[in-house]
Length: 102
Image (cartoon, rainbow, N blue to C red; front, top):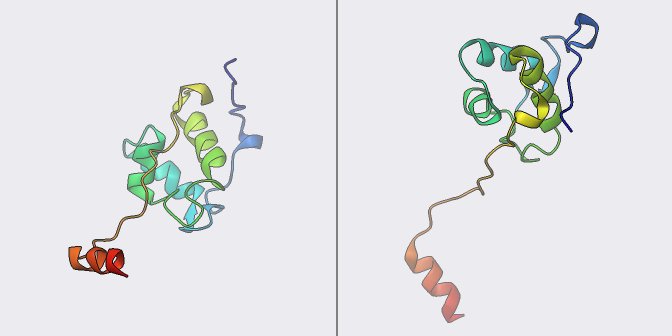
């Protein structure tokens, strides 16, 4: 079932409201990214860092999806979730080798 988002002014989140607590991204920053061409979850994430924090978008996904839907006219069902990427740090091979010895 396609869910329509209420696009009325009464339902709009204020620009100064933080929508991603981990990265301290505001609704206004998300809207600015959309005006600059971001039209899906991943492009908003790349432009604002929303969804890249400790919660890995578990706390902010729905509200960001709602803003994208309101600003672009896309239905929520059309929006694909953020691409999930585990955090990665480079390691020296010798560290892995030492771990297997012990």
